[in-house]
Image 1 (cartoon, rainbow, N blue to C red):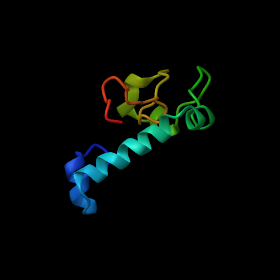
Image 2 (image 1 turned 180 degrees about the horizontal axis):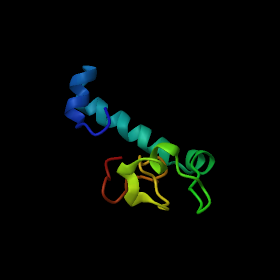
Image 3 (image 1 turned 120 degrees about the vertical axis):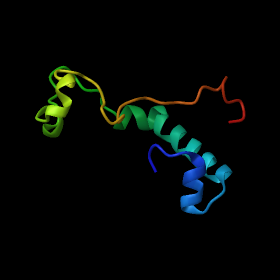
Amino acid sequence: VMGLSSQHVSERFQRSNETIVRYFKKILIALSSPLFYTSQVQLPMASTPLAAVIDGSPHFWFLHNCICAVDGTHIHAFICQENHPSM
């Protein structure tokens, strides 16, 4: 369901769009909470080796020596309270 709209996900799981959005927000809040984030997320260091699939692939030549998350695994995402007062 990654990269799909909430309408598509609600159709896929046969739930209302409101239910999908509600639980997405709950999961997002849980994953960005300090308790989870500080214990489970580790930012890469300059000495952290890249995965072999990325380092050895000609498709990723532009990421040589790049310190980042290609798949978004260590990005601290959160919902700003000012932008979403209904939460």
